[in-house]
Image (cartoon, rainbow, N blue to C red; front, side, top):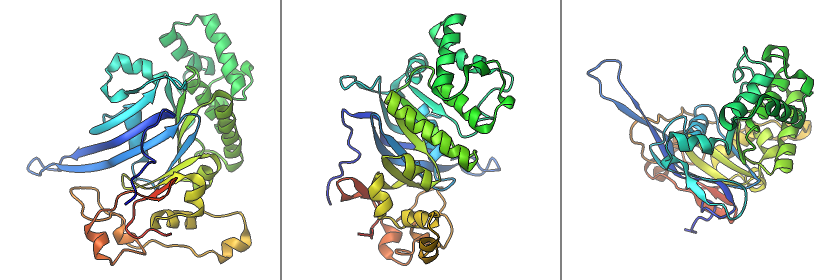
Length: 344
C-alpha cells in the first residue's frame, strides 16, 4: 500500500487535526443497566493549508458538528491533537490546543472563530449590532467606546452592511443581513482560521449566493483559512479547495475537490453526488440515481468491518467488507478513499 501523504502536517498547514477521537458514554434507563460507549469521532486526521478551504460533507448525524465542537474545545476530545498556528506567517509555530488551560485557550480563540448555522439563534435579540460586535473588543482587548465604534463601522463595511445600522436589533434584519452581522463578529479579532458551520443552509437560495460570494471575497482579501461544514455538495464544490467526506464519525474520502467531484472513489461519495441535482435538464434525466439500501449501522459498542457495508451496492455481500475495516489509501497524490473496492 502507498504511504499516505495527505494527512501529514506541513509548515503550510494553518490547522492540523491528528488522530482525533471522541467517545460519548450513555447510561441505561435503569440503574442496573450497563453504560454504553459510543465513539462518534474515529481517528480523524485532516490538514487545512493556510489561505485554503476544506469542505466537510456528510449526512445528518455523521459527526460533523461534534468535530466542530471538538476543534473549538466546546467538548473535550477523548484523544488526539489539534495543532493551530498562531498566525499565517511561515515561521510561526503550531501548538496543540488540547494541552492548553482555560486562560491560554481564551487567547487562542481570538485566532480561531466560528460562524454558526442559524443567523438569528446565534445573535442575542436584546443586543444591538454595535453591542454584539463590540462586546468581544471591549471585554478581551479593552478597547474604548470610541475605538469600538470605529472598529465596528469598519467591520460592517467589510461585510457589506451600512454602518448606519449599528443601533438596530437582530429582528430588524433579514436572514442574510443577520449572517453578515455574525461574520462581522467573527472577524472582530482578525482571526486566521474561520469555522463555518453550514453558514448558508438556513438562507434562501438567492441570499446563499450573496453570502458565499462574500465569504470567498473575504478569504482572498484577508488570507483566511476555512473549515466549511455543509451537507450541500453544490456549495462545497463552489467554495472548497479540498473535500473530506464523513460517514458515521470516519473520513471515508479525502482529497482535492476537483478529483473528489470528478472521480469519486468511495460508494458513499458516489451516492451523495448522484443525489445532488445538476442545472442541466437533459443530463439530469439521463443520470442514474444511486439509492442506498439497508439501515445506518449503530455506533454503539465495537464494530467489525466497514460501517457502510450493509448499505453499499458494492460490498454488501462481501465477506471482507463485513469483517475487515478499511483504511484510507491513496487513489492519487491528492486523493484518498477508505474502501476495499474503490472505483478507479
